[in-house]
Image (cartoon, rainbow, N blue to C red; front, side):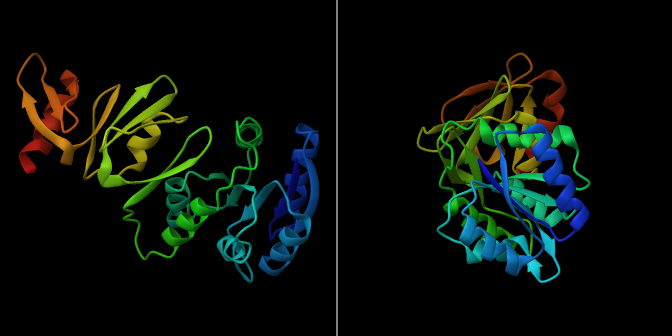
Length: 249
C-alpha cells in the first residue's frame, strides 16, 4: 500500500513516517508534503492508496486539498490538533482521524482498520463531498450522517433513523422503510454523536429517536413502541429520563 503524508510541521511529518516504517513494513511511504499546494501535486502524481492529511496548514486546509483532487481514490486518515468543528464533521462523515501528538496505539488501530477493509481502495469521494459540505456549514447541526459498512458508505438522513441497536462491538441501524445497516462501531459512539435533542439511550442495547416513538406501554419498567412496530424495553434507571423527554414532546 502506497502512503502519502501531507503535514506542515517537519518533525510531525518525519515522526509519522518513522512510525509507519517501523510498524507497517507492508506500507510504502511514497512522499512527504508540507502544504496544500504541494499536497495536491503529490496526490495527482503519486496516486497514493492511503493519505495522512493535516487539517490546518499555512496556505489552507486539508479540505482544500480534497476539493482539488476529486476523482482520485484513496483512504484518508486526518491528523489534527483539537478543532471541535472539524472533528465533528469528520466523525459524521465516518472518516478516521488522529489527534496530535500522535499516539502509536491509535495510529496502529487506524491503519489496521484501513488494511483490514473488505474492499481496499473503496471509492469514497461521495463521502468526502459530504464531509466538505459539512465543514462549510456555519454550525454543527447536521441533517445527515455517513454509516460505513463493509463495502460502502451509506449516507442517511438522521430523521430516518428509527433506532440503533447494540450487537456486540457493532451497531445495527433500523431506518424508515425497513432498511437495516450494520456498522462496525459501538452504540456508545453513536450515542455521543447523534443529536441529544432527538436521541436517547433507553437500555444498554437500545438508542432511539424520540420522534419515532408512537406509544409507551406501562408494563414492568415500560416499553417504547416505535414507528417500525418494534417494542423496546426501557431499563429502570433510564425510565425517568425517558418519561421526562416524552412529556416534553
